[in-house]
Image (cartoon, rainbow, N blue to C red):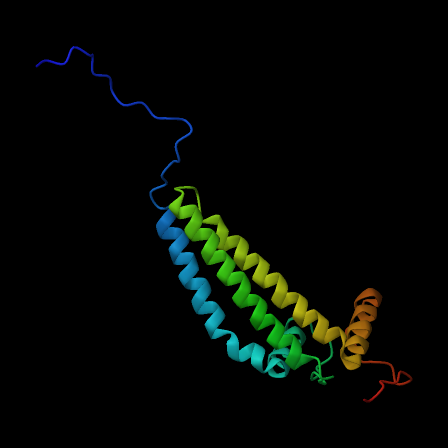
Length: 167
């Protein structure tokens, strides 16, 4: 029996989810890179004192006005390192969950791992800043470097009259 209805070409529903060909590949690749990055940084945050000493050495190399120093652990580095690891894992888990949901809904998803990376970077930066500014020697050296940069001098050693309390 012949169909009397006229065949029309399919039209796109403007409310239907769209497909983005490379979005899934890029999003999954970014998640893999993020997972590798988190697992490779576990050792750095478990021994936060060593990480902060490397950071201070690099700061001295990049900015000679900042005097060479070592981080004097005030007991805050270990707990902050554990908090960083915990928050990194939580953010990564939420990032994976949100990315999978967006891919399943056929929505653009590559940006979710990027936002997760930015959030993780903010947590790491904040943790390191908290640890560094809890060290009186760092604060004194930081202040001396700031004064040396403002004065235009090349040396940034703490003044001999300043005292650094010892815990």
